[in-house]
Amino acid sequence: MASLVEVAAYVPDTSVTVEEAAVPLGLSPQEQRRYRRFLGLDRVRWDPAAHQVDLLCAAAGALESLRGNEHRVRFVLHARTIEPTGPYSVNPLHQAVGKLGLGHATAFGVSQHACASGLLAVDLAARLLAAQGDPSALALVLTGEKTYRHVARFMLAATIMGESSAACLVGLDGPRDRLVAYASRTDGRFHELTAVSGEVATAFGEQYPAGLAAIITEAVDAAGLTLDDLALILPHNVNRVSWTRLCNQLGLPFDRVWLDNIPRTGHCFCADTFVNHTDATAAGRLRPGDHYLMVSVGLGATFSAMVLQH
Image 1 (cartoon, helix red, strand yellow):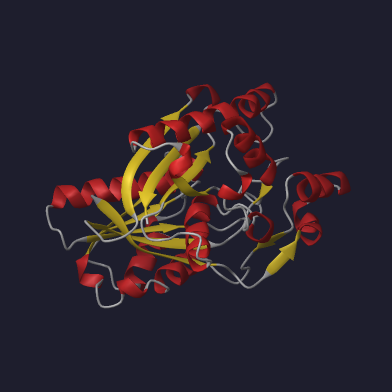
Image 2 (cartoon, helix red, strand yellow; image 1 turned 135 degrees about the vertical axis):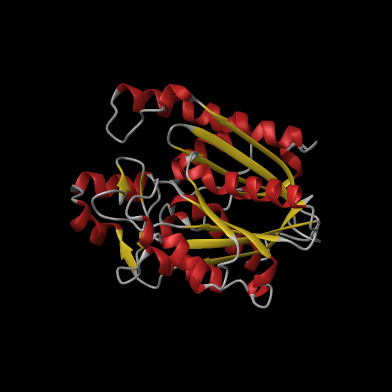
């Protein structure tokens, strides 16, 4: 059984309000009000001086369990929402691996599930470690991306993207945060979905709550649990209204979903659930033995959920 040995996050100091972000994003006053009042966004974290490699190293550098155990890391996975482009010689992941002293590890990116790729990477890391047969081996999952203005700073009428990053060290048979079940489904009807896809985007919005509820139920059933057994849900931080609808559909108490970061970080690609994990743990919302769920949705459209035991 795989476990999360440690989870760490990097949240930039630079905090930008929705109104301040509206200038470079070109948001109208009406759109600003929608993001703030209806979607529950207030601020977003950007780090203008940081490059992609800086975000990855900042998160990984906060992992206390990595120090002195670099030689045990066999795999490094960068879970990405957007497929990377650029010359191979300046690959940010390879640069980060070098700076972290992990040049001996096999490093690669995972992007097929968009914003749900973080959970895919954890599951894949667990499978790779199990195949290795070395109980002391570790895998490092990195998440977080730059919000390049011409590529991905906001999703129209849904969220504003942030630059927080996270790192997760995965091992086998650990004493805490054990992976109990993982479920993932891709709905190919929305493979061409973009923010301006018209009828396709409308259809996705209508199917979104049902798809999210179905994958959560599937993961919980696979774990042999019920929704009442979950102490907490760690979501992707797209917006507040989508989680309100989900809670209503599932009959789930609203305070069982960790939504504290939506107004302060924005949606940080694959890093959301891991950033939420660090904050919820620090706040004492997860106690030893608690079952909890990490859940994310990626455009394309992939719905993923993972049950763990703290």
